Image 1 (cartoon, rainbow, N blue to C red):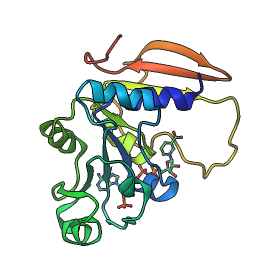
Image 2 (cartoon, helix red, strand yellow; image 1 turned 90 degrees about the horizontal axis):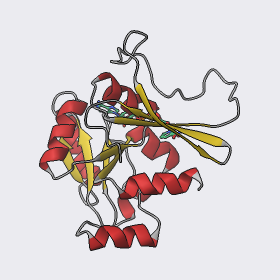
Image 3 (spheres, helix red, strand yellow; image 1 turned 90 degrees about the vertical axis):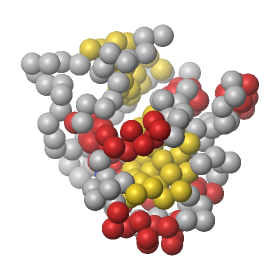
Length: 199
Ligand SMILES: NC(=O)c1ccc[n+]([C@@H]2O[C@H](COP(=O)([O-])OP(=O)(O)OC[C@H]3O[C@@H](n4cnc5c(N)ncnc54)[C@H](OP(=O)(O)O)[C@@H]3O)[C@@H](O)[C@H]2O)c1
């Protein structure tokens, strides 16, 4: 099974998918469940065919024509600080719901707001700045890491996470729950909380 199929599986099992604004600008992701069978399964369970899309931005400099906004008949949520709400609504109000995330957008508050909107399972796809905030705040129940067999060799390359104080350290190691091979890459699944789903 290719890793893209695996990612589609995880997406199909989520109520919402979140990426940071930089990922949205750089990669222009669609963030849709692709396989028709998985979309049909979701619909049969009474869910929308694809999860809610979520992003977070400070500057609100996002293109309303980006694939994130124009693909998928599903709600798109943009969290931004109070000071950027007016500009974000002006630019994106026709294609997304702009949510006031407070003076500074805090991932704990954002998660609570998503929960109030019916999101039980959130997939955070990156990038590093967003992942760092979810992990340092202890909000993640599971971490899925895929290791590819090559070197990047560029100190400017994107890091998985940035600086921060993480709940997992040499004295408190995360639990490695599963190792799975997909072709020449390996998937590592870590249980990060009691809510980790062992099925
Ligand atoms: N290998 C992978 O699987 C994978 C997956 C995803 C992404 N990526 C890569 O990761 C790169 C981007 O990573 P990144 O770490 O630079 O950026 P990122 O996490 O995608 O996004 C960072 C941006 O999100 C907004 N943001 C994050 N936290 C915020 C907060 N608390 N309040 C307000 N806004 C907030 C800001 O947007 P504004 O700048 O708009 O204010 C910030 O510049 C992309 O180039 C992508 O290719 C790789």
